[in-house]
Length: 265
Image 1 (spheres, rainbow, N blue to C red):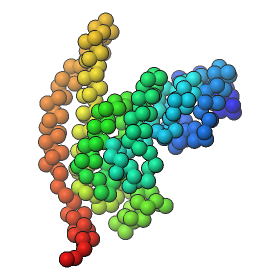
Image 2: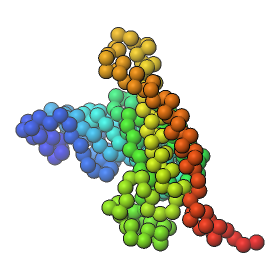
Image 3: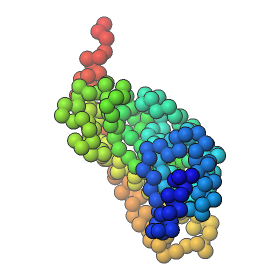
């Protein structure tokens, strides 16, 4: 109720067109989101907003509460399409929950956006392809991609802290610069970022083309420009995919560590 009252005051005083709730996990307390939706509606405080949430909290009642409150966009830490990698991260979520949350949000008219990360220790090519397939299948509205970061206090951090040297936080790196020895060299992950984003945009354009084919009355000049721009990007994607394959060279330091860890016979 307090948050709903604050939103009512903001709406009256400033008439914002959008609000961004910066909580890492919105609506962590069970039942809070449903009560929040009712309170916002009762106070006539609806303002479009976006949040970050966990997929395992986005059950049917919670999504309805978000919709009632005026939520437009939900960012979730999908991270990987491989259950093996999610388990290694101690994420506590499943690939099935990611698919279900995306379907549920879309069904109720809310946008769903994925945070993804690549380069987690032990990630294989098959794990990467599973993540790309998850993006294709779930059709999120936007993506945020980074490499895996070891956060102090986690098992991941303890596992790689000897490799960090002077690098102890994000200030010493960018979103695509591994702070530890990964499976591949950093340039591979930068190229992977480009490829995944290009494929994502092209699949969104393909969906737009299908929509326009079925409903030509909704065709606009802006959408025509989108389709024409995408047509020119298709050949480029093949070039970028080929470059990604060329960059798929194992990190020599990583290979040395694996060799050391192998039991002697």
